[in-house]
Length: 396
Image (cartoon, rainbow, N blue to C red; front, top):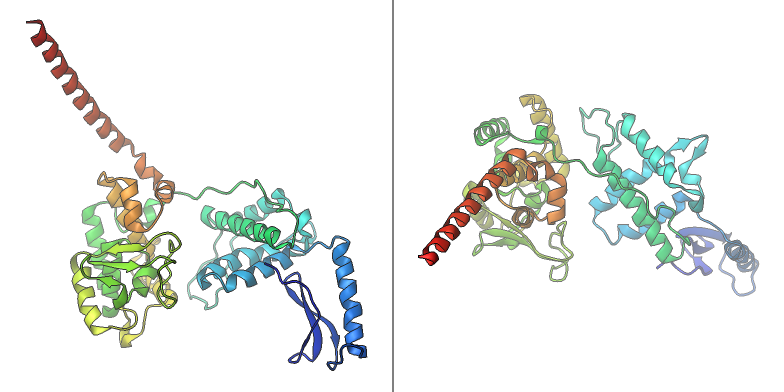
């Protein structure tokens, strides 16, 4: 809920202040002299003017709503979520078209076509994205379908929250079309068959520092998100299951890792092969803190992982190699083996809908469909033959 505007004296600012539309507003600067002093009376006059503007139908700008929403989620969401939203919102509020800045638009004047024009610009004009920590070698990029979709979802979430909190009367983007994310492309895979995968995986391991190799092996064996492997601790390991178990929101203690699907269910990551044995040893070695560590006992951070795989890209000339390539390869091989999307969703911590969305090209694989059709026909022919035999016997 948005804070109700009221006049208060802030000693740190030496001024009477109020919260208005999610922002701090200075009403009068000077000593605290309520209820009859000149500073307080000036603050009251300014407060009344502010409220009069509100009563006349004051409409916040796009920038005010998005900045207020970011402050709201900064105390409720993970920092990664806030950063993703910020990456979408910052270029949106700074975008100019026909001499007008989107951030200064009154919310009720924002239209669907404004958003479509912005997305088209981001899709076609390469830019060098700004990061908290710049990563050397980053080339100018454009937004793909996933980034475009994240932007629309973020804007919708912000305006819906603004409606619920009373900042605006109506979400201007109700009914807007959301870009459809593309399927995971083959170029992002480690390899296209078992032999290629093993060969390329060995090359990746050989080109990596010793301290990174167990981490990379865990990515291959589990298909887990890199952040999940990096966050795993001894407390998350369940020996009886041979798995990491990240608890859902209702049962998780505050200091434990909050996984992507934390709201409704536990996230279970089954371990196997080299990774399972290695984790058993790491649990004894590091009873407190992250299990997988870099040289010197330092934990893996997102920037370390991204930087390492960028170096591997150049060294091995794998143009699309990222830490997530292992996750995509795991999913691809699982589905190519004839396994179902629902089981894969459980193993990967996704919903079946997400799996079908990103790997639809495999679920609709022509060769696989033909093989299933042929098996169905053979089975049907066998049943039909046996039923004919039954009829003939009954006639005797």
